[in-house]
Image (cartoon, rainbow, N blue to C red; front, side, top):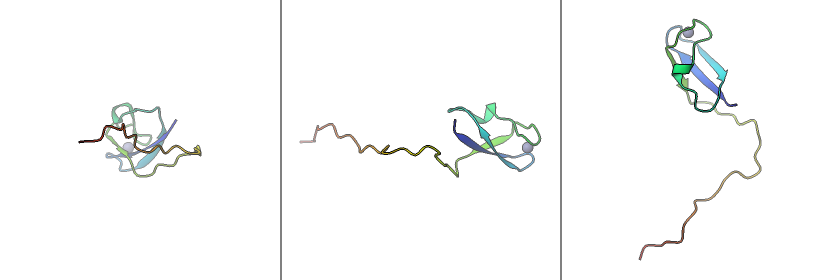
Length: 66
Ligand SMILES: [Zn+2]
């Protein structure tokens, strides 16, 4: 599961949560003040698993124009 960073707009604290993919702010409650007024942060993203080659080039389908 990825770690999502949130920022509480009520107590102005940042916290990180292990959540399932696709979790929303509506599903998140501040760990400090139990407020639901939180915002998801997209700043730091550290992938723990080291993938050998996860980069795939853009698949050109061969249909060239003209
Ligand atoms: Zn809070």
